[in-house]
Length: 460
Image 1 (cartoon, rainbow, N blue to C red):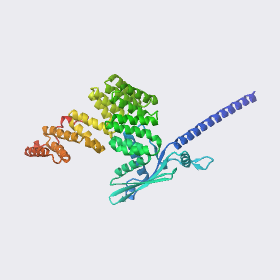
Image 2: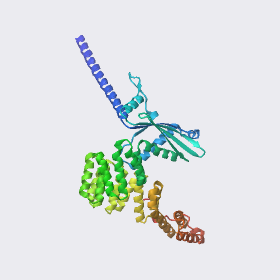
Image 3: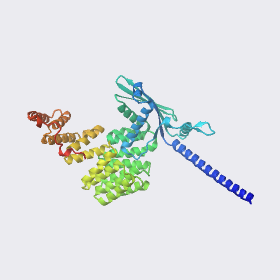
Image 4: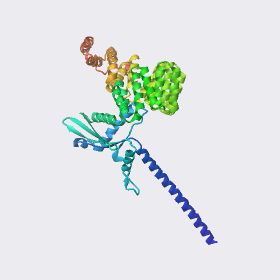
């Protein structure tokens, strides 16, 4: 009896060991599959590998080691990529020294070597970037060296600036221009639509060909921004000829039809965009804006609800909804949405322009000036367009300050306008009268910027 019971226990233990071995094998197999999958995904993705950027000793002593500078450069690249919020995925960019260079078992081949060889065999771009910063008196100089092992291409980029932040910002632009020019074109379009054209032409004329639909789509947006809906429509159709399942072009084509009041064609284009990718909130958003432009408030709100459910933090959706609400007479709600867009993307040029115009028309001149100043800082192109409105807002703000007997603050605003309009004699006379009034007033009554804040100076 005891021997029978013992053999039963041994048999059970053997079964448990067998099951454990199977489970262990399955786990190991799953791990190997996961590792192999990650390796293949990494191998087949366009990649930019950034190596440490050399720095002079003065920068190193301040904490800017070669690794820190490389990280800062990558941060600038990511900021440029994120500003426009394009649907286009950029090339992967990573710090080369953070990639584990493990040996693949039984092969003697390193992980990094394996990835580079796979990319070379399948002609997948891999760009290695190194370089150094040097100082020439009071100027910093950045030299970036780009090396593409697959085609033996070597490029050197040189930028100079007085400050490190500006230097890395310029270097990041050069890096993207060389490795992902279509994405830089989107960024330039946000600041000045015409400035993107040369880079768009470069994208169309040079490899890779899969960038061409993006380039033609952006070219269409340039035409639209300048009021040429027909030319924009032709570019969107050209993008769709190259790639029939291309949601951004259908999306923009729908907007072009809306502007021409071709609503059936617009709805067909929007529906096609969503058929190709139903999970992009921006597609619902543009369709919602189209409905708002037709005066269909119910359909507009339904589409914006769907858009925000998919992408609640997309500033372009917030801006589109804000424009729609303003168009439908809900101005306060509209400006709140536009302000949310700016909070999500502080460098969103179009949102600053629209907010500035809204506050100007609402006679909230201090808020208008704030947005116009940020707009001028971000884009010289838009700064020229709104220069007269910026000056007018400053003058009107100054007049309101003068009424409040904030004479110093009023004079400051008028003198700011005078730097833009140095020959404005009427303004010179106004400043002279205010100074005389200030100097003639008792000391306790002189405006010094400490009196009651003007009614419109509150933050939006």
